[in-house]
Amino acid sequence: MDQHGVPARVSIVGDGRLGRALAGALRDVGIAVTGPTGRDEPVAPADAVLLCVRDSDIPAAHRVRGREIPTVASSDA
Image (cartoon, rainbow, N blue to C red; front, side, top):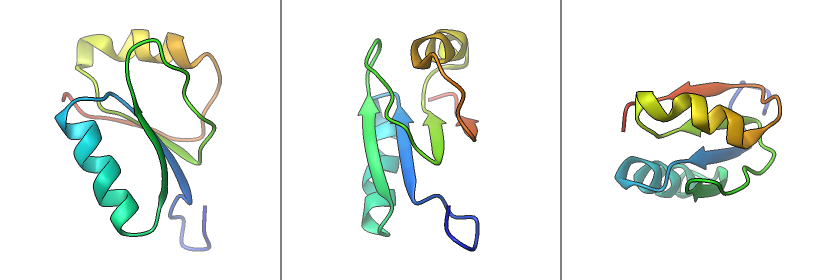
């Protein structure tokens, strides 16, 4: 995170339209982005993780990551 609380590194889970759009937009403003990752792919360490998956898939996305992350946001993609 920078001094303003903006994450320097973001991982995106969900390789659908929303995940790809957010990845591109965040990269355009200079944020380092890993992903978007698809189902069963590892999630890279990051300051924030955005879950761009259906609400019904959130529990599975949490199991796949297998570790604690500082911030989670989700959107029913």
